[in-house]
Length: 350
Image 1 (tube, rainbow, N blue to C red):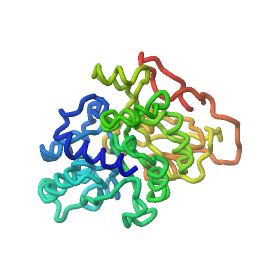
Image 2 (image 1 turned 135 degrees about the vertical axis):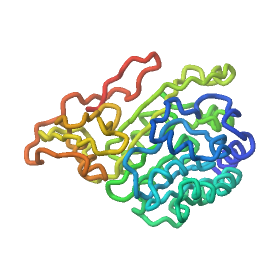
Image 3 (image 1 turned 120 degrees about the vertical axis):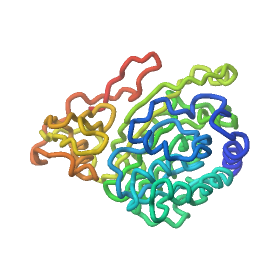
């Protein structure tokens, strides 16, 4: 395990100096950022942006005043974006184990404080391994949101990361993160390839193993926000990988202890008020729950709780009780939750 950590530190501290040094497009964000992210990104220093190796969008709507933890924060790009979005009353902590990345992140703390117009910086960085979060002095249940951008795949003990993340979240909090997943388990010989691991490919979790790990940690009903097929765009590495397909996926995992294993029907409904900044006309909970402003929509019990038992509560009207159970919520399926490489759709969970 220590050799793995050394390889990752060398790859991201010495081998890579800027985003263009990546040998594949796995650690590239495939979706154009929404306006609220772009506006914050304009304030982030160029050197911090140049060392960005993420694969998705990891900061959800409605974060003002919250306390956020970024796992594998690198040069601090997402931390500084989050620092702007949470406002002066919020706080962001980044954890990374690579000295070179932390040096860049720490160099620009005062720069961003001035750019944001804050009296004091609300962003800080801690050196540490995301597989050892329980040793870094964080209080249990002390973060509203945990984010991470293309870093979980670099961890050897992914179950430990998920377990610790669950422990650090407040009730109703969420782990909102992007990472690379595979359509099958990656063979051990490829996992031992330092370039493939550093490029976020051979450490990618088979999607069904990830769901098992997440549920085992306490995140009973993982929700995919978006997914995109990853094309490696490197002939030599493509030949090594063979038929394995990869996906960049953003997940949100809620810490709600009473969620059920399946989507159950209690005859409940919700209506979105249109009061979330950046989502005035509609709000997307995940890739199959789109809530237009003012429209009453039936939901399963888990979705009801994800809205009722979290910071999203004040933005919805809620209808129904838990008195009558009507069976499984219609539309639930067990197919792979990602779009296929040819763009065809797969069944959604509810």
